[in-house]
Image 1 (spheres, rainbow, N blue to C red):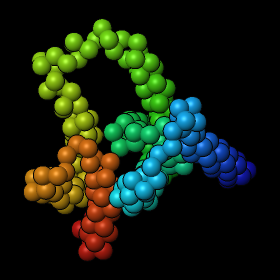
Image 2: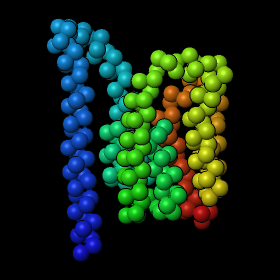
Image 3: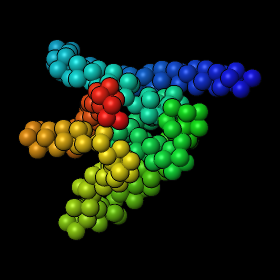
Image 4: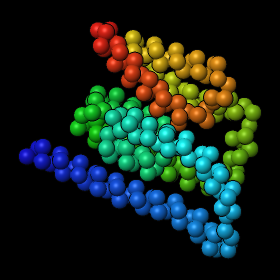
Amino acid sequence: MKAKKNLNYLESVHRDGLIWGLIICVMIFIFPLAVSLIFNVVPQWKPLAQGLFATLPMYWAVGLVEIFTYVPMLGAGGTYLSFVTGNISNLKLPCAVDAMERANVKPSSEEGEIISTISIAVSSIVTTFIIIIGVILIVPLTPILESPVLEPAFDLILPALFGGLAVVFISKHAKLSIAPVILMLILFIFVPQLNRGTVGIMVPVGVLFTILVARIMYKKGML
């Protein structure tokens, strides 16, 4: 009976996730179409095609990698919700991982599935409210936010976020963390093109590399 209930829950998650994913895809295409119709303008197809051919391969590759790396960590519900609301690597993934860590549940468990989905949903709601408040207060707060005193703090928000999570997981998996830490240090030190804008790409790369190293270490009896 319990297995049947769990199956029905997962079926509903996949059904609703597919529906909302298709709705978001339609909405994404509706906006440029609406702009074209309202202003009676049509993009130049040759430059558009050139730009798409230059960028699409990277985004398709990253998208496929993210599916294989994020799904085991976020669960079905968390994955659908994250891909609809966006900002996965910077916000949704750290939020879900921290929530499961505090609840002492594993990502692959039923409890982890529920905790991940709830945490990402709450994160999305809070983010939406913060954006609304930010839009309302952007004009009066602009002089404060652009202050040279606060600029270093804004530059370090993302490193501080991932640094806090890294301390927890590195302390629990010290052996496994050595290889990915060395890899990322080498890449970011010797490849100047990598910066905070490439986090969305480097997170899946780091996950795949860690899985490969973990597999090798497990086979050799080091884990």
